[in-house]
Length: 406
Image (cartoon, rainbow, N blue to C red; front, side, top):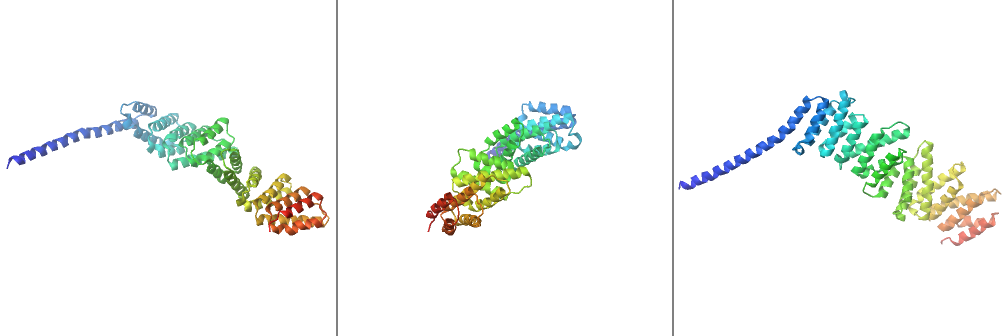
């Protein structure tokens, strides 16, 4: 009866010894990790600026660097940030910042991303900012806040450049490269802006290359530029869409619809913007006409009145008024027919009073009414036969009458 408990006690003792052995094995290992990091941190704190760089270099070659190096770089970045007010222009501090930023990026230590951005805002020199952006190109992947910060910075630089101020070109180049590497779709408008801003060939090409690295719906990206960017970039985006051979007719029509709507609703006092928006309107109309995109009828009517005013004020060539009339005809609805019928009624009144009318514009209105075929135009077309219009207009009116739907 006593033997069994002894054997049980011996078994428990063996288990306890095994547990203690395992603990003794594990505890030194866990303590071994901390003294390496703490040792480098202690030496880093005690060293002068140039020696701090050497400490980071030595740590990077340590056989066990993989266990602590990311945390050490984060520690160094904290020091760099803490003393930014005093030493942000010190060459040795800038060199230390560069070393820590490169190291954090190379180590792939993602927790440093937020600290790196704080360093970016605290230090104004190009060397530090370029190193931060190079590191964030690796560490900022999937980090919406970091990507948003870089987008906003590049947007500000683009605006500065357009205003005539001298931007930080090295940082802009690094921004473009970083956003391309991060590949987030939110960066498309700002990269498109950089590509079309007029920077040196290197930055413009870099922005173009970065755009190709962004996965997603290219038409969606162009729509976003049309909605968000400045008028010159809206125009460039629409032209890029028209040149894209991969777009279907529907995609082109939708892009033209957005372009027309935006150009009618966007108001700006600068001549450059007004010209860009006017060009955007004029370019969208032939696309909508060709594809008979009736969904845009309301905006096409607004455009017609706008271009009619432009023409009367000498701001638009007759070509654009004729295109606007043809587009109304392509819309094929009663609202467009009513606009055209009223215009023809005005021409009839002018002719009745022995005034002169533009034959080319009058013919365009008649033909557009025939294209729509709305019976509301009947009286206006019929009345032409009683007026002293030339034969070309008389013939066109008779032909249009045969096309009306009853």
